[in-house]
Image 1 (cartoon, rainbow, N blue to C red):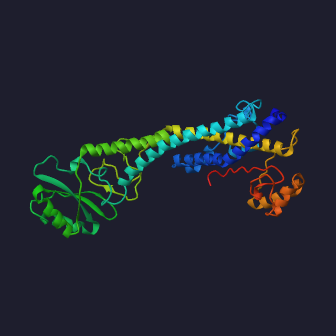
Image 2 (image 1 turned 90 degrees about the horizontal axis):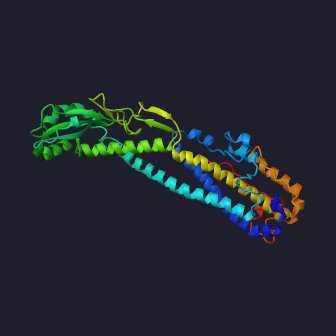
Image 3 (image 1 turned 45 degrees about the vertical axis):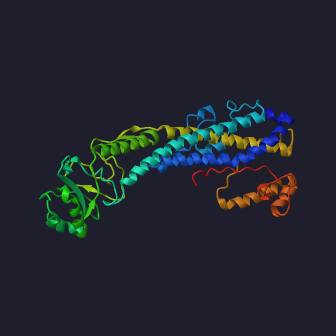
Amino acid sequence: MSWGNSIPLLKAMLWHLGELSRDSLYMYNLIKRMAQSVVEVMEDAKGKVQENLLANGGLKEKMKCLKIDLTSFVTHFEWDMAKYPVKQPLVGVADTLTKQLSQIEMDLKSRTAAYDTLRLSLENLEKKSTGNLFTRTLSDIVNKEDFVLDSEYLITLLVIVPKQSYTQWQKTYESLSDMVVPRSTKLIAEDSEGGLFTVTLFRKVMDDFKTKAKENKFTVREFYYDEKEIKREREEMTRLLSDKKQQYQTSCVALKKGSSTFPDHKVKVTPLGNPDRPAAGQPDRERESEGEGEGPLLRWLKVNFSEAFIAWIHIKALRVFVESVLRYGLPVNFQAVLLQPHKKSSTKRLREVLNSVFRHLDEVAAASILDASVEIPGLQLNNQDYFPYVYFHIDLSLLD
């Protein structure tokens, strides 16, 4: 590289190299955050996350059209002359790399914040749809036809009856108080614990009916049928589900008319008496794929993860070059190589061999590896991080 011919530039880069060293963890953490964001977005296809963490670009022209995994990119790494011209000053190249990653981080924060807002809004609505008949929302269970509405005298109540008390309810509900409409009860939904029954009575005996129902271990569920509110809640859930799937996930789906707008719940609640009404709590089996595609967030994450990873490896290469020249001087006379032990247990043995082969390059560093009390003049590093050869670790375990 032409950079090696300018000693003043290398001296100026010494300070910047320290900055890059301090920023190394930040850069790696940024890439890991992006990988984790891919995991979150692909919640329905987590087994395919790794194949979306690629480093496309930066290799030879004939390989650019291929899906390059991270290991292949590193082992076939070549400096990108077009993006980072070697005729530029070293500080300029380093600044370009760090500014690129800073911009990616800013965009990542804004995009993931928008996604988190959507996800939390959806989770809050979903929480209303979980649990048993005592706690969950009833808006996806009841229908307008289940109620007597707009009556000055009559009102329809919803009563939760334990399963073992169905017979008792049918025999006694008309006599729990005066003015109960005969044969007005109907089972409209049930879960593993009990059923949700309607009953119609005169408004003026409502309080008395609630008291007698409680004495018989029947629970009147406080609920007012507001068609506009129920419609708004259903539309909001549908909109959020659509936004999350169509805008962010890998599959764009549409719900068939009449299918449930609510996701899979922890408690199965089966509506009764209306064959067109969806079973709340059951996974929607009638979704039709509208085509496989990538939403904007996933697409952005894939593209910018690749860009960030490529920039990070260029920074690694830049640090290797600069520190090697600073250590061993000019003219440039060193070789950078990648070493990957097949087993983690082999790392210690590999380190021993390398220290033995290259100890002559820096006797103080070699001695410090054996004796932790030996300090290396001019360096504020832990001795275990310093070796007689230039060493930088590349950790590709981004999902651990």
